[in-house]
Image (cartoon, rainbow, N blue to C red; front, side, top):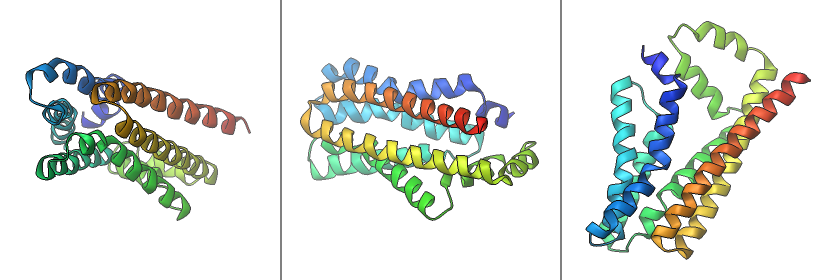
Length: 205
C-alpha cells in the first residue's frame, strides 16, 4: 500500500503543490497579522516542512530531499532568529537546498556513482519491482541515462540556487516569493521536459 502511495501521481502533485504554492499563499494571508517578515516566512514555510515530516512518518520511509529541505529550513530559521539578521537567511533556505542537491548530483556523477542510481535501488529494495529494476540497471545504456539525468538535475539545481540567491538579496520578501514560485515551477518543468526529451531521443538510438 505504501509503495502504491509513493508512486501515485496524484499524491506527488499534491506534494508539489503544497511545497511550491502554499508558502506563497500563506505568506500574503498572514503577513498583515504578524510583526515582521521572519515570522511570516517561518509560518508560511512551516506547512511544507510539517507535510514532509508527516508524510515520511505515515509512509514509514525517509524522503531524502524532503528532509534536506527540513534541515535547510531549520538552519536558516535559527540564523534569522538567533542572530537577528532579518528574513534574508530564511529567504535563502531553498537556495541552500538547491545548492546542496546540485553539488551532491555533480559530485556523485563525477565519481561514477550517480545519486539517482543509488536512490532508485534503495527505493525499490524489498519491493515487487526489485528484480525488474535490478535487471534493467544491468544494462549499461540505462545506467548511462540515469547518470545523464543526474548531471542535468545537478546543473539545473545549482543554476536555480544562484538565481534565488541573487533575487533574495535584491528583492523585497513578497516580490521575492512571487518570483521564486515562478522559478520553481519553470525549473521543474524544464527538468522534467529535459529528462523526457533525453529519454525519448536516447531510446530511439
